Image 1 (cartoon, rainbow, N blue to C red):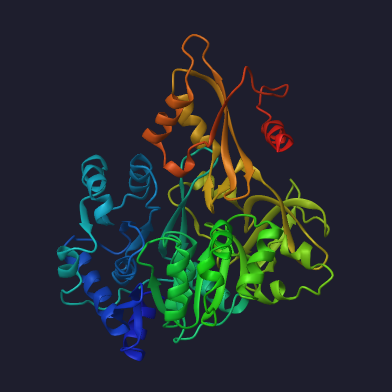
Image 2: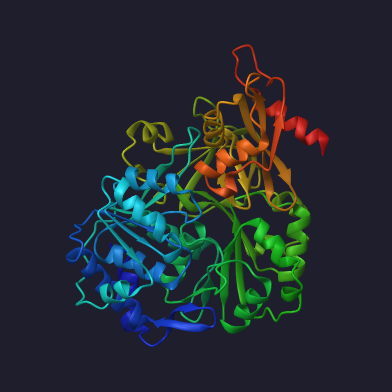
Length: 510
């Protein structure tokens, strides 16, 4: 199937109902959304000469046009490459090259970079701004029928960084995303056409993926005017739109729970807050439940198994009388009904309940592989199982607890940050002899980035030098919050840096 059928179907069945909204105002009903997707598909095929299977990248802040572009891409039989709009230009360039995207859809804020990317990226042939008069013309041309796609055809390339610092494109098929949507209904909750979803987090990531479950059922998609998380605005939109849900990083949930505008608001229209992407402290979660009531649900997933490995449902959150409630609140829940989850040892053998090992998962939601990276695919998908690289234990009652994150991943504000990427950038500075980047627990952001630096004695780098190096090469949110200059780094007998000792040092100081 082609996922674009959802919008086409709603365009007929729910023609006059709200499909897309900006703030409190309707942007498009379903008939208009469907027409613009079908016309945009025609424009991409005819104006830009794209063929089924070609990749189209989207680099945009959240906007109604983002969804128009996404479903026009699918309607035309093309493959979407949603890119984090907060990435550095060089990071975006790498993704465009890796995906061999031929068209880039972007917004005014990224227009300057887009023009230089058009010149420097080998495959990129066209750039179009949305919204713009050109976008309006493109989405007003004569429509074409939905291009047939097989369930195993790629739909979304989700680029997620690895330990080498080079992003890998998880190839998500139409079947993967359809299964993810069905999993939402089975384990998070039902969605009705009278409901709505608010995109306060980036559509390029989890928020956009779980938004598909609402689009499929004909619910309204709401984009906040601010483009971010503002307590007063969120409170107003909750009162404006019925049955509203949204996806948020734990830091966002904590911020909203402490906002006076939320505390004073009528939350009767609020349906579900889905949180995930990082651990949430029990004290913060308890406060959020006090403010929002039993409306929170947690998910654990990866780009390789989009948003769908385990879930801690609203009923779990509400059952405070359960003798293991606190332990469950610090878990990531039980497996979704559509997947199998195991904890295995280094040989791939399942371990008993309560024992620690690697989390592996299989099911129709698991990616087809990494785009044009057969070796990485073979390493991640072994014997039919996705090896997540996360370390955890499955308790006797079936709840998964993550014990550690392998590959030294740092999660700050819900964003994945990979130390190796930062280390490679900083090691490019002549004033750095050695470096190790680790995460430090942070009550506001979950974790903050700390760089332990051994400076070159002949021409030592300063913190200001390293800060500018980061600004020149990587996204701002990945920058270390502290540069700690040391004489040497702790290593084992093989010369490998012992990052755990550095993390323990930071914990001891706290």
